[in-house]
Image (tube, rainbow, N blue to C red; front, side):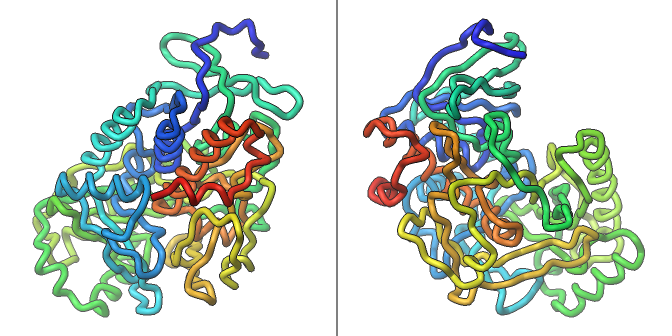
Length: 423
């Protein structure tokens, strides 16, 4: 349908499709190695799920990590958020209130994050095209020659030496001919969540409510049809507002009609959840909803089949790899498609590891970044969180740039080289 007669926008060293937590990190990492980098992003800002989805906390740190022990791009980001008084820093939270499921988490203000990501890519010399969507790819002999993009300037073509798919949905990889998996063995996907923030909450009163009473209030809300999760999942942010993660929406993002309806359902759920909190949860009597996420936060989409697929057993047995590029103690966290609960499983060794080969594919000049990496279903449920995605993105950007420098295809690149560039 499209060929090289489409007008050329430009040729760069590295093109990144998607400017979410993985994409922005990939772009900066490549730019730091003196590459000309272009991000294609369909929102008006960077951050993806972190900003448009208003998730409001970074998860995916490793055991024992602190705010001060970070390295690389994640370290830079947390320092900037701290300077803006826009993060709590890394603290321990307990998933589903379970003592054994303590993990590191860093809350943040999503509006400050938008500004900081702009600052970081600008400082690195990365070019960003907002309001722009990739349509497809032009390939030849299992190599991407260019991508076709569309924005208000029209349909154009972008060429690059290396392409990074940080699109969450694996859109570029699929367009280039890669196979993918979707959902569990029965095709079931984890639900999405519509996040929102509230102000005028009495934080002290809410925090003084015993955990057992919060559990009872949640169960009452579920029975009344107002809540979708059997725990009260609302936490304070550095600016004093509270974010709430209690919407649960069945969604297949590859079914556009169903996906559109899911956005409507998510906003309707917020109305019911916020009313229940105001009427029934101590501390929220005077709460008002200040804003809702621009889009449904998704946990699942395509998982591209790469050179190595991280297995559920790899995670559960804490399998190590010579080309590990990210490690985390975040457990397998599979949310029930019908809401209410999650299946949580900790790795036997307390942490799991992701090899770079999960980011490599059969396409010579393509590298994956973030949630579209090659994993089995349950393995994906612990690799999908944002601190991990940033580290995967940084690894992808380093590999893209370094593979150009040493003159080999990125799908033949030795991931063991990556650790020497991160400090």
